[in-house]
Length: 404
Ligand SMILES: Cc1cc2nc3c(=O)[nH]c(=O)nc-3n(C[C@H](O)[C@H](O)[C@H](O)COP(=O)(O)O)c2cc1C
Image (cartoon, rainbow, N blue to C red; front, side, top):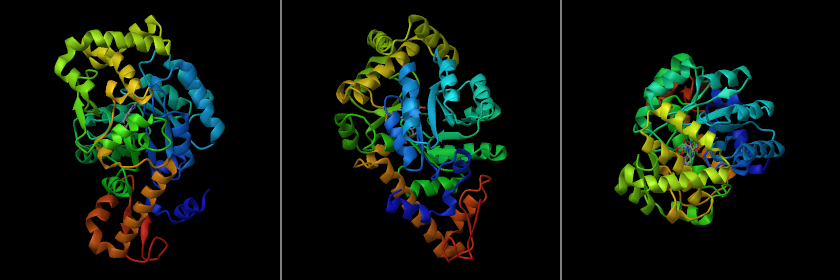
């Protein structure tokens, strides 16, 4: 551990040691989400080494890449990490066999999870953490036995619902509270202020995609990173034109042509790209058709949408792997407008924790009277987040108690 990391860790405010940290066995309540094409073994390991939870973005990997990546992470760290699955993938059962055999700790899901998969994973001792963008989805996955939830508001990158984070969080946390299930806030998070705000809402930490994509540890090509860096906070668009479901992406000419063309006219291009994806990942016809049928059944999407959805991974790959941002689609959150440099995962985590510490300490110094709004709101959350009572004296002072 470097000196500054050791110092920061020694200083970490007790409110930052949330139930989620204890559930998963991590130091800081910060998650790097499983982004397809982006969150490979290197990024996942870098986050784990920095004290957060890294999640391997396996939804765009073929079976061999997935298995090799899990082994690579395990060779490089003994810290906990997660894997992002597609429940509708043809070989999902085989992937779960590997997941269980390798003792991976956390399962997350791209799009909707499946009850039978959650049951199987839980029986094997895994922590199941679906992402949700609406209250009714939270209710469903809680019923299925989810151990933790990522609640993603509309600002977030990738597939995301219409409700802003600030409204979705209190709505869904009130549903999770009676179940005692830890939640992570996602969609627009970036710094220590956001982490403290998430704790005040009653969340147990934050999950970030765009911030980690824009780290020096992500292997996204420089040309594509430069495109993200150049964007302001209005540089994204929330649209169903890319793959038939709401998706937040950078607003570029490819996306604009899809928006203007509408579903039917984008079909020929979509079919061409879906075939390219089939070829590049070695997906069989049987698997492709099976996936299409499963997607149609799960989402009630029209066939045009199903074909467009199959097409999306290829368009993402053009930007995220091939480094041709002008010719591809780039998922990204509104928060990209705040990111102006590429820090390492270690520096991202340390700066968030240091800033959150400073804010929490300043609340304490100001005393209960000055901070009653924030502190008492947090204090009522059943997950016990940031319940700061008393005033003055710092975290070790005898007049301050931090309930957890
Ligand atoms: C480029 C990109 C790719 C993504 N791919 C996936 C994915 O494969 N699976 C998934 O569950 N979520 C995916 N997401 C959503 C993120 O996991 C995360 O929930 C979201 O980025 C949080 O919002 P933020 O971007 O404001 O941090 C993706 C997001 C981005 C930006």
